[in-house]
Image: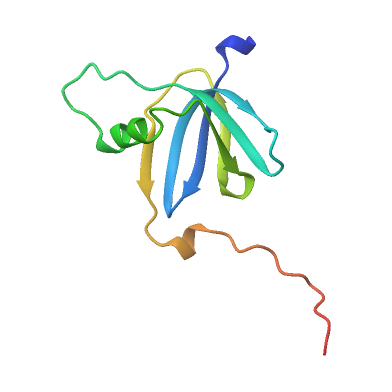
Length: 110
């Protein structure tokens, strides 16, 4: 796969919702702890049925060239050959979907 044809599917959590976006540009970024994504790929609907979450994503990122996502919000990054439908999925229960940060094994006694 050449660099120009590489397409990434990025899944991340934002405000209790799972975002799934397709982008052509992906890098670690200049900000430490952030993943930089850009060059968004949107599906052009040829059918009458329109997905409201897809339209909401297009409106949210309409004027955005690049965005920086905190690394701890990233769920998964895939290199794909075919674009799919960008979407937002509501998480049912936040506590079930978020893994707790590991606590230290040794805790000092006072």
